[in-house]
Length: 234
Picture 1 (tube, rainbow, N blue to C red):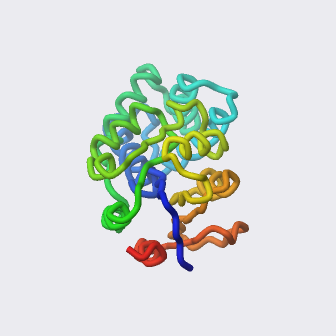
Picture 2 (cartoon, rainbow, N blue to C red; picture 1 turned 90 degrees about the vertical axis):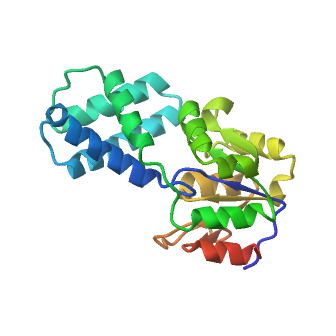
Picture 3 (cartoon, rainbow, N blue to C red; picture 1 turned 120 degrees about the vertical axis):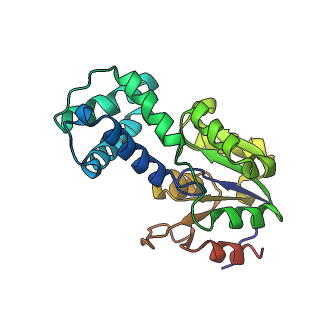
Protein backbone atom coordinates (compact mmCIF):
# COMPACT_ATOMS: atom_id res chain seq x y z
CA UNK A 1 0.00 0.00 0.00
CA UNK A 2 1.34 3.41 -0.99
CA UNK A 3 0.59 6.55 0.99
CA UNK A 4 0.73 9.97 -0.64
CA UNK A 5 -0.08 12.72 1.87
CA UNK A 6 0.93 16.36 1.71
CA UNK A 7 1.41 16.58 5.47
CA UNK A 8 2.20 14.02 8.19
CA UNK A 9 1.12 14.50 11.79
CA UNK A 10 2.47 12.22 14.52
CA UNK A 11 1.06 11.27 17.88
CA UNK A 12 3.66 11.66 20.63
CA UNK A 13 3.12 9.16 23.46
CA UNK A 14 3.64 5.49 22.53
CA UNK A 15 4.10 6.46 18.90
CA UNK A 16 7.29 8.52 18.81
CA UNK A 17 8.11 8.37 22.53
CA UNK A 18 7.91 5.36 24.84
CA UNK A 19 5.34 6.60 27.35
CA UNK A 20 4.52 3.12 28.70
CA UNK A 21 8.17 2.51 29.61
CA UNK A 22 8.50 5.94 31.24
CA UNK A 23 5.28 5.52 33.22
CA UNK A 24 6.15 2.00 34.39
CA UNK A 25 9.69 3.00 35.36
CA UNK A 26 8.55 6.14 37.17
CA UNK A 27 6.00 4.19 39.21
CA UNK A 28 8.64 1.63 40.09
CA UNK A 29 10.97 4.42 41.21
CA UNK A 30 8.17 5.92 43.29
CA UNK A 31 7.36 2.63 45.02
CA UNK A 32 11.02 1.92 45.74
CA UNK A 33 11.60 5.43 47.10
CA UNK A 34 8.40 5.53 49.19
CA UNK A 35 7.26 1.93 49.81
CA UNK A 36 5.20 2.91 52.85
CA UNK A 37 2.91 5.00 50.65
CA UNK A 38 1.82 1.83 48.86
CA UNK A 39 1.72 -0.59 51.78
CA UNK A 40 4.97 -2.13 50.47
CA UNK A 41 3.04 -3.52 47.47
CA UNK A 42 4.84 -5.04 44.52
CA UNK A 43 5.78 -2.34 41.95
CA UNK A 44 4.11 -4.36 39.19
CA UNK A 45 0.85 -4.44 41.14
CA UNK A 46 1.02 -0.70 41.75
CA UNK A 47 1.75 -0.06 38.06
CA UNK A 48 -1.16 -2.16 36.78
CA UNK A 49 -3.53 -0.66 39.37
CA UNK A 50 -2.48 2.89 38.52
CA UNK A 51 -2.77 2.25 34.78
CA UNK A 52 -6.37 1.07 35.05
CA UNK A 53 -7.39 3.89 37.38
CA UNK A 54 -5.61 6.52 35.28
CA UNK A 55 -7.28 5.26 32.11
CA UNK A 56 -10.74 5.59 33.62
CA UNK A 57 -10.01 9.08 34.90
CA UNK A 58 -8.71 10.22 31.51
CA UNK A 59 -11.93 8.98 29.92
CA UNK A 60 -13.90 11.00 32.47
CA UNK A 61 -11.66 14.01 31.87
CA UNK A 62 -12.15 13.76 28.11
CA UNK A 63 -15.91 13.63 28.63
CA UNK A 64 -15.79 16.78 30.75
CA UNK A 65 -16.91 14.93 33.87
CA UNK A 66 -13.86 15.90 35.94
CA UNK A 67 -11.24 18.64 35.73
CA UNK A 68 -7.48 18.34 35.55
CA UNK A 69 -6.76 18.83 39.29
CA UNK A 70 -9.26 16.07 40.09
CA UNK A 71 -7.58 13.72 37.61
CA UNK A 72 -4.11 14.44 39.00
CA UNK A 73 -5.26 14.00 42.59
CA UNK A 74 -7.57 11.02 42.19
CA UNK A 75 -5.22 8.79 40.20
CA UNK A 76 -2.87 8.60 43.17
CA UNK A 77 -5.50 8.67 45.89
CA UNK A 78 -7.36 5.79 44.30
CA UNK A 79 -4.19 3.80 43.59
CA UNK A 80 -2.98 4.10 47.17
CA UNK A 81 -6.41 3.14 48.48
CA UNK A 82 -6.60 0.14 46.13
CA UNK A 83 -3.31 -1.34 47.37
CA UNK A 84 -4.07 -0.64 51.02
CA UNK A 85 -1.56 2.12 51.53
CA UNK A 86 -1.75 5.37 53.48
CA UNK A 87 -0.11 8.49 52.07
CA UNK A 88 1.47 10.84 54.58
CA UNK A 89 1.82 13.60 51.96
CA UNK A 90 -0.74 15.28 49.72
CA UNK A 91 -1.69 13.70 46.38
CA UNK A 92 -0.35 16.88 44.76
CA UNK A 93 3.07 16.26 46.30
CA UNK A 94 2.96 12.61 45.23
CA UNK A 95 2.09 13.67 41.69
CA UNK A 96 4.99 16.13 41.67
CA UNK A 97 7.48 13.45 42.75
CA UNK A 98 6.09 11.01 40.20
CA UNK A 99 6.42 13.54 37.36
CA UNK A 100 10.07 14.11 38.27
CA UNK A 101 10.73 10.37 38.02
CA UNK A 102 8.66 10.19 34.82
CA UNK A 103 10.79 12.82 33.08
CA UNK A 104 13.92 10.81 33.88
CA UNK A 105 12.73 7.99 31.62
CA UNK A 106 11.60 9.76 28.44
CA UNK A 107 13.03 8.07 25.38
CA UNK A 108 12.30 7.42 21.72
CA UNK A 109 10.50 4.23 20.81
CA UNK A 110 12.80 1.85 18.97
CA UNK A 111 12.96 2.80 15.30
CA UNK A 112 10.84 5.93 15.67
CA UNK A 113 13.63 8.51 15.65
CA UNK A 114 15.15 7.31 12.41
CA UNK A 115 11.73 6.97 10.74
CA UNK A 116 10.67 10.45 11.88
CA UNK A 117 13.82 12.00 10.45
CA UNK A 118 13.41 10.17 7.15
CA UNK A 119 9.78 11.21 6.82
CA UNK A 120 10.49 14.80 7.88
CA UNK A 121 13.16 14.96 5.19
CA UNK A 122 10.49 14.65 2.52
CA UNK A 123 7.17 15.74 4.04
CA UNK A 124 5.97 18.65 6.14
CA UNK A 125 5.38 17.22 9.62
CA UNK A 126 3.87 18.09 12.97
CA UNK A 127 2.58 16.64 16.24
CA UNK A 128 -0.95 16.21 17.59
CA UNK A 129 -0.99 14.94 21.17
CA UNK A 130 -3.29 14.57 24.15
CA UNK A 131 -1.87 15.40 27.54
CA UNK A 132 -1.11 18.21 29.95
CA UNK A 133 0.41 21.13 28.07
CA UNK A 134 3.50 21.75 30.18
CA UNK A 135 4.43 18.06 30.19
CA UNK A 136 4.04 17.69 26.44
CA UNK A 137 5.94 20.92 25.83
CA UNK A 138 8.73 19.66 28.09
CA UNK A 139 8.91 16.46 26.03
CA UNK A 140 9.15 18.44 22.81
CA UNK A 141 11.94 20.53 24.35
CA UNK A 142 13.77 17.35 25.37
CA UNK A 143 13.67 16.04 21.80
CA UNK A 144 14.65 19.01 19.61
CA UNK A 145 14.70 16.89 16.46
CA UNK A 146 10.90 16.89 16.66
CA UNK A 147 10.50 20.62 17.20
CA UNK A 148 13.08 21.55 14.57
CA UNK A 149 11.24 19.58 11.92
CA UNK A 150 7.65 20.34 12.93
CA UNK A 151 5.67 23.23 11.50
CA UNK A 152 2.78 22.67 13.95
CA UNK A 153 2.62 21.14 17.44
CA UNK A 154 -0.97 20.75 18.60
CA UNK A 155 -1.59 19.87 22.26
CA UNK A 156 -5.11 19.01 23.38
CA UNK A 157 -5.09 21.02 26.61
CA UNK A 158 -4.07 24.16 24.74
CA UNK A 159 -6.88 23.72 22.22
CA UNK A 160 -9.58 22.61 24.64
CA UNK A 161 -10.47 19.27 23.03
CA UNK A 162 -9.08 15.75 23.46
CA UNK A 163 -8.61 13.21 20.70
CA UNK A 164 -10.73 11.67 19.27
CA UNK A 165 -12.81 14.87 19.26
CA UNK A 166 -13.15 15.95 15.63
CA UNK A 167 -12.63 19.58 16.61
CA UNK A 168 -9.03 18.91 17.63
CA UNK A 169 -8.31 17.38 14.23
CA UNK A 170 -10.03 20.28 12.48
CA UNK A 171 -7.87 22.73 14.42
CA UNK A 172 -4.75 20.75 13.50
CA UNK A 173 -5.71 20.77 9.82
CA UNK A 174 -6.04 24.54 9.98
CA UNK A 175 -2.62 24.80 11.63
CA UNK A 176 -1.11 22.70 8.86
CA UNK A 177 -2.93 24.70 6.21
CA UNK A 178 -3.98 21.53 4.41
CA UNK A 179 -7.14 19.85 3.22
CA UNK A 180 -7.90 17.11 5.80
CA UNK A 181 -7.91 14.49 3.03
CA UNK A 182 -4.24 15.24 2.31
CA UNK A 183 -3.08 14.76 5.93
CA UNK A 184 -1.71 11.48 7.25
CA UNK A 185 -1.91 10.85 10.98
CA UNK A 186 0.46 8.34 12.56
CA UNK A 187 -0.65 7.07 15.97
CA UNK A 188 -0.93 4.02 18.20
CA UNK A 189 -4.42 4.32 19.72
CA UNK A 190 -7.24 2.61 17.85
CA UNK A 191 -9.83 4.98 19.35
CA UNK A 192 -8.01 8.29 19.81
CA UNK A 193 -5.81 8.14 16.73
CA UNK A 194 -7.24 5.72 14.19
CA UNK A 195 -10.95 6.34 14.66
CA UNK A 196 -10.44 10.01 15.47
CA UNK A 197 -8.32 10.61 12.38
CA UNK A 198 -10.53 8.65 10.00
CA UNK A 199 -13.70 10.28 11.30
CA UNK A 200 -12.08 13.68 10.68
CA UNK A 201 -11.41 12.73 7.07
CA UNK A 202 -7.67 12.16 7.44
CA UNK A 203 -5.54 9.33 6.16
CA UNK A 204 -4.29 7.20 9.06
CA UNK A 205 -1.27 4.98 9.70
CA UNK A 206 -1.79 2.86 12.80
CA UNK A 207 1.38 1.99 14.72
CA UNK A 208 0.30 -1.49 15.77
CA UNK A 209 3.26 -3.48 17.15
CA UNK A 210 0.89 -6.10 18.62
CA UNK A 211 -0.58 -6.56 15.11
CA UNK A 212 -4.10 -6.37 16.49
CA UNK A 213 -6.90 -6.80 13.97
CA UNK A 214 -8.90 -3.65 13.29
CA UNK A 215 -12.43 -2.92 12.18
CA UNK A 216 -11.07 0.09 10.28
CA UNK A 217 -9.35 -1.52 7.28
CA UNK A 218 -8.93 1.86 5.62
CA UNK A 219 -6.09 2.53 8.07
CA UNK A 220 -2.57 1.49 7.09
CA UNK A 221 -1.44 -0.81 9.91
CA UNK A 222 2.28 -1.26 10.57
CA UNK A 223 4.41 -2.89 13.26
CA UNK A 224 7.81 -1.96 11.83
CA UNK A 225 8.73 1.66 11.16
CA UNK A 226 10.53 0.62 7.97
CA UNK A 227 7.18 -0.50 6.58
CA UNK A 228 5.76 2.99 7.08
CA UNK A 229 8.81 4.53 5.45
CA UNK A 230 8.43 2.19 2.49
CA UNK A 231 4.75 3.15 2.15
CA UNK A 232 5.79 6.79 2.09
CA UNK A 233 8.70 6.09 -0.27
CA UNK A 234 11.32 7.63 2.01
